[in-house]
Length: 440
Image (tube, rainbow, N blue to C red):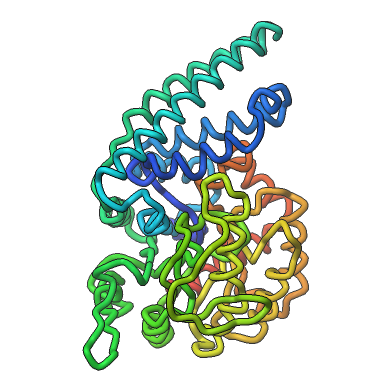
């Protein structure tokens, strides 16, 4: 008698990232790392358990990002609870567009040199401060601090060797994900990042028509394309409106063909460094969604300006802007990621929840919610939701960006398992994302 092995049940991480060293460039070093280190005096922070913990997280983040894509994927599988992942691309080049980092090779080279000099100084200062702490620590603590110092020395050397690379590393990111998806069919389901400003994403006809076939051709054949992508990723704080005409044309196609999209929608994350951007569509200003077609000026755009992300999130990514999109395309299969979480309160979360009740296609995910109390608050929305809304909540990790906020992916999964029951996890990790992705 032949025993048939039961097929493995898919468990899906619907929001993760597998950025390698080609994405973790000197520009990301400038934005996400140095700004965190400089936020307040490092010596004072290292003298507390929280300061040591944050330094460990930065080390862990860099170690992961300097790995190859295949190894990063393996790390996620080993530490996460899912056997299937949805890696989302990110257009870092256009996040930096207009900020002085990409306006000519000489300027980029000088900027890179300055950033590397600053990074070298920060790494050296951290090692010195670890030595000072070790001088007054016990044997076990000295050993731990010594290991951290050696890790910093190795990371300093590796980040020093990060190449300037080509003007646009975006295509290398695309190739790496497609290669990984081909090596792991049905287990790696990549989403292509769309920025309407990027040349080659569309073609404008003389009669005002917009040809988005360069984008849709990247999709799987079952979605009308010729490529290997399962959907699209949007990140509007990088410098464009959700109602940009190129995107509106894309939404029409995606609604008609059942193509899923994931859009960043929280108060944190990345944002453009540019002091001004040409924006087409709508913006959210003074409590209203208003048309805008021209240059949009920003008050906050410098690296260390704490309001830079908040300002661009409000202007370019407010949930009411997405409501405008959903009113035009109510069955668009759109995931507003992070459930609108912000430090300023629950307004965005409430708006997204109400829109999920109103629009059949709208989803959300619970990615990068790293604090257990906040995750329990999100569960309350999940539990009170009527069945048709409950089916639109998705599990996501935001790996490996979430490593900056907690002590490893295993901690993230432990929080999730301690918050949701086994049946609830099945809904969030299997049934709901399978429907969102259109999987059989």
